[in-house]
Amino acid sequence: MPDTNTETVAEHAVALYFAVKRDIVSMHEWTMRGEEWERKGTGILDMNTFCGGGARGCRNEVVGIVGGGKIGTAISTLCKALGMKVLISERKSTPKEETRPGRTPFAEILSQSTTIILSCPLSPTTKNLISASEFSVMRRDAILINVARGGVVNEAALADALDRGEILGAATDVFEREPVEKGKSALIRGEREKRVRNLIVSPHVAWFGRESQEKCVKTVGEIFEGFMRGEKINCVA
Image (cartoon, rainbow, N blue to C red; front, top):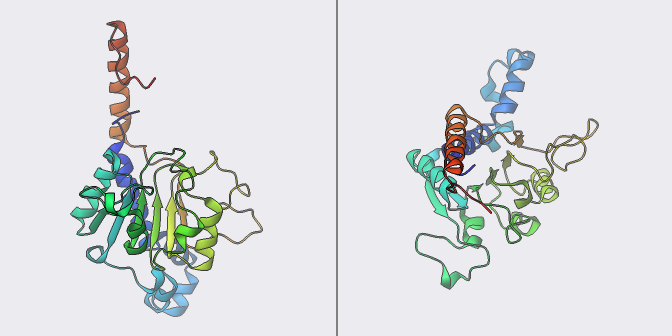
């Protein structure tokens, strides 16, 4: 529903960023096993297995945001507050010489960004926007965060890029087919298959939060009241 979850999605995107950058899930599992830490004495000894050998500080991040709408703007605000340099992507099809003020050519977003966050809608022009050719020109220390739609990223290409080490890591809240089933997505493999390297996932819950639910209930009420008065509010068709 329009404007009810803008901040919530932006916050989830940043949460996924930190989860990947600090390798939180792997560190949790490593620590919970206990015997490894106890035997080695300190987790620092094994840090090269996490975070690509050490997480980059926020002030050294270049964040490329693909999708400059309300959610993208909210993500930009949070990233800038953390001291990150933020680039807002121009449309992929736009020639470099026609790049709008305040935008960065899509090709430069791919090659320069240490983190790329997707917050664009899914459309014929954004279907498989990020696929094998895009991963091949991204930085090897880059991470990809997707809070847009599953079809924006080619899942097989993402899994391959992660396994091959073409990018450092990724996180996605969305999938091409939802709900996702184990073994039926390139990202969520079957029981006997090795997990995709450096991938964190969540089940399309970026929108979910106390404030977003309250806004949703309020908006539904306003739409219903408007309908009773013969007014069209948030009409999408």
